[in-house]
Length: 141
Image 1 (cartoon, rainbow, N blue to C red):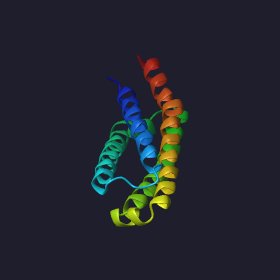
Image 2: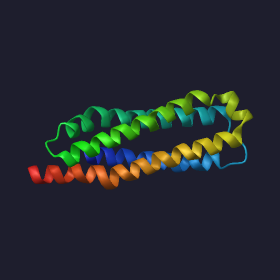
Image 3: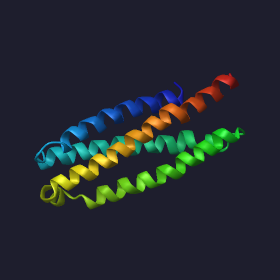
Image 4: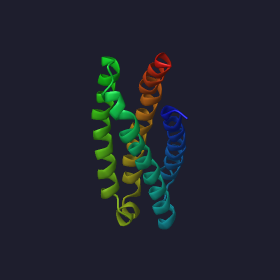
């Protein structure tokens, strides 16, 4: 299985979680604390596993590509992802269970914004970055 197939599968799973998370934060009141904690844990685990696969299996080879379009595109995505990952870590640290309960509406707004940024990033990787990788591999074969 090619790495882009696995990463696209990851993206499908993440987009499903993004949609479910949007549904959760759209509710007028927070779900039970444990349910939300478990969901956040599962979401974080899947997101970080995916990012690790990209960081270890995809991006290093793209950066070393002799094709300047591929290497520069990869660098652009890396630079952008650093900001999104930092935003995610900050969001995760800032929104404790106690704070979520007290500021549910604000949590929902910030979470929706973060989820939208993540979904946009996934779309850009699927539509722009992964096709470059796949074209390179098909030309090499």
